[in-house]
Image (cartoon, rainbow over all chains, first blue to last red; front, side, top):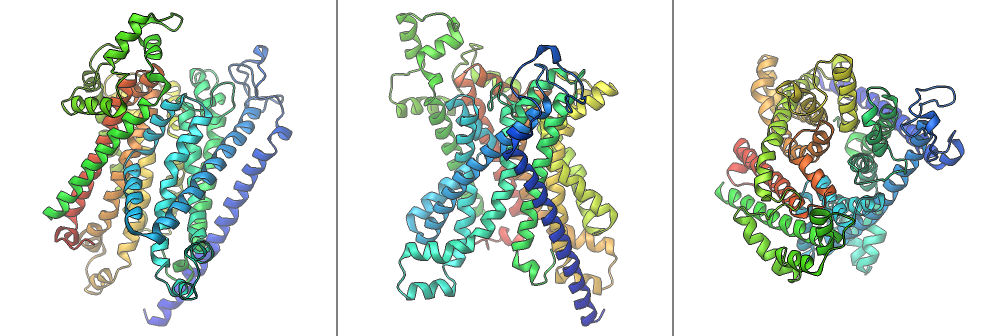
Length: 291
Length: 316
């Protein structure tokens, strides 16, 4: 193939890829938006009270009155799935914002200042990353006692390390770049350089990480609740709902099926959003390199 | 090479020591390690009111009135000698109970890793070679779903279909080979999907290198290029991912063992958490962290063996 043809083929692939990427970005952000809306509007769109127990309606299959059926305590599974969306999203938002902001701050300072503090911080990050994260979270929850609050604290303590490491690596390259040199030469203070010049440049990778992290957190939270360490009855949470339905899988699979489906769609949507955001922000892909 | 090994060995020891401090610290700051809670949960029952003598005895036995660093020192000294204390619930040495349960987890994890590699590596290579075909799309979409599917939910779907629907495999417990199938598939699915994606993208990366172009220009067969030139380099990042996945596997085993009532260390950990059996929880967490650290050490060493750039000490 001659060079022009190769270039042509390459350009074509880039265009195809970027169209695909935009489609995927549009699709995943639409699904994420719907999930967020369901979470925000939960009290308005729930057909029944997610907590009130009615033994007369226990383990009913899906029907007009109860589109997803009822659980072993006669509660509407659809309403509980909707309420669970809210639980998961609120908890994930709290965890991601606290651990994200904390991790970014640590990464910025550690990367910019360097020296002993930097190596000490990064050593401890390494040690924490060397622990299987869910096991560490479990140990933390044991010390605080089971409950959604403990899960939020534990996952926040576990998740900031990823942001710190990511941001530090970005800062190390950014701080040698010319515009930062220039800012320094103009006599800006360190904190001004960090927040005005460096921070805006690390936002994009942090957003990508946060989106992927939400998927990860929703899954960890559901796993911990499934094990009985997270949300306690009568709270509506997907993992806990699957746990409550486990004895009825023979007679009433719908009790476990629907919360699991909601969980999977949420995880899928946020990880696709993260992936397509990464493609979107990655300059290498925009300039024409492929994969 | 030796410098690299020593460095990694030192880092691993550091991690294990840090893990022991974390494990000890976290669990000893719990409300569960006051003499009254230990008594109520493990010895006399929740409703009983403990006597002075009982409280003194428990305090002495678990050294609860000593300062924390002293407790840690004694605990560590015994732990190094293989004595992790006695379980509050079973009244037997923790190390012995863990020793009974650990092989079941190793069996489960080992078979799952093997199964996932067996699926993921050929599929990843095929997807990369047949890039952008129907096969590739199908492979990638299935991987996407497998990653997003919570393992406990997948476990129930498999139970509903294969145990209750067709009666192929037992629902739970440990009854010969057939009870291994569903737990292994559950654990392998998520891990295999991640490995497959890594294999695919790593293979694509390598296939776009100049030396592959050279090999093609020499007129080598495509299969020869893939098996001789591309695979060797494409495996490197995959090895790292497999090592990291092992950590998820340990976490995942807790869930899968709970679902399938598998008598491994994950189930033991969860049972001990609910029984407030602190020495047992400590033992399990420490063992899991150590195993993870050792697996990652092995991965790094095998990486060095596979990659001459590291072997000859040119790592930065």
